[in-house]
Image 1 (cartoon, rainbow, N blue to C red):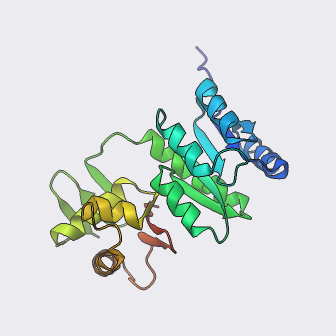
Image 2 (cartoon, rainbow, N blue to C red; image 1 turned 60 degrees about the vertical axis):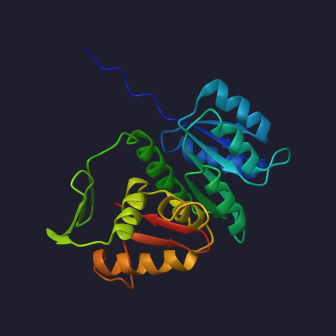
Length: 232
């Protein structure tokens, strides 16, 4: 019996610039995605509710709602992966969108290959939300059940805060976590502005798990925004 072909993932593009919608539509359709487009935040929310896309690409500069407001409304009922589009110097907008629940961001003007790669990561992360006992990234293995971390088979001793920080980043592999998100999760409410703690502990972690802490490949810095754990 012939197997039913897998349905192409549906991507919803919410952007008020027609040329951006056209570019994204052509790019995504050429790479085996189905596409819906919306020119405003309200229209995007309606289409998201009606069609339940696999992923949303959301511009922050919409004519009716701010991107952050559209995202907050979407997150009231949906966990769909969201990649925000942001102008090059809009770090505050990126941070606000990530804090509101976005999974990643791409800056305008963007490279289509980079966008496609980030889209694949977001979709892969969405299908792997169930808890896993062991996380592996390159030569790093994190055994969550045993609270054991090894690099190339050698056990690495981590302080309690270092372990909690690494676990948080690894469990959200591929997703940008803002400074505020990390500080709130690891150090608790009231520490959201203590970024010096975070820089120190990130440096400690890199010394222990990176082959070259000066050129990290596991814990990447998103300048002005936060950090991303890179599993591949």
